[in-house]
Amino acid sequence: MPKTAIALFSGGLDSTLAIRLMQVQGINVHALHFTSPFFGVSPESDSGKYDARRAAEALKVPLTIHQLGEEYLEMLRNPAHGYGKAINPCIDCHIYFLKKAGELMRTLGAVFVITGEVMGQRPMSQRKDALKTVERDCGLEGLLLRPLSARFLALTIPEKEGWGDREKLPQVKGRSRKDQFRLALELGVQEYPTPAGGCLLTETSYESKVRDIFSHKGKLASRDFRLLRVGRHFRLDGQTKVIIGRNAIENEIITGVKESSETLIRWEEGSSPTGLICGPASDKAIEVAAAILLRYTKAEKGAACQIAVFRGEEQEKVSVAHSMDEAAVEKFRV
Ligand code: SF4
Image (cartoon, rainbow, N blue to C red; front, side):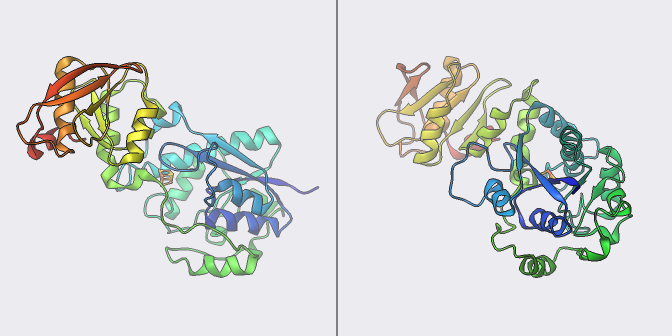
């Protein structure tokens, strides 16, 4: 009877190749894909882009999509193994993913877990010692097979049991992608996304925005992090933040995501971005938020400008504000 493995599956080339390498050895594979505010394609996505669902269909493997929530965000706030060059907790992140994969393995009666990890490809999580740490801490010791680099690593239980023959596996390591492109040809993998893109947590420009949420929010919610993808962000005080749209699409998104406790602002007399005040919008907060918003309009310096304020669906009032200068705006930027 064929054995089943759970595959961590980003939809990218490496995890696709890991699955194909097992399939050609007669292993059934069930793919597990994670989405979060920082990476992955949301299950609701209907875009024509290449995504994990299409990639799983092409591989003819069932796919489970797991949306990461509060538990993952709490790990991100305080990762036991620290961060990489930005705010990417790659070792803890892999441990977290693999624990979930282990749970799915037990639920589905699968017998081991595979990943597309390549030894030496990433500085933090794919060094040999880091791969060992991850395996130890995720509770899958001996049951974790990394088909692309398995021949550089200790023998696993699936290999000892004869479910996967390491002699038939490639020897891929390091940052070059040449071996993967060659394998893709050999294994008939024709479509895959480019390696660019990926995880926002690895971007240094993102770090201060994430840390700002950690410093000001007790209970973490995915929405706070999803909003980081939209607009310019400014911190007014411990409880209040303002997000200013950078273009028409962002203005629409900001308007669409407004919750009843939040406040929208726009300059009435000229072309204006939309501002979303998250948190208590006192008169003072509205005045400061409006002054920041006016910086991104053609409002005359020093002129009193009328700002429309929407707390509910309807416009509540008109406030008067003056555009803030660049240096002052920067003091509020997250
Ligand atoms: S790059 Fe992002 S998704 Fe990948 S392991 Fe690191 S934190 Fe997790």
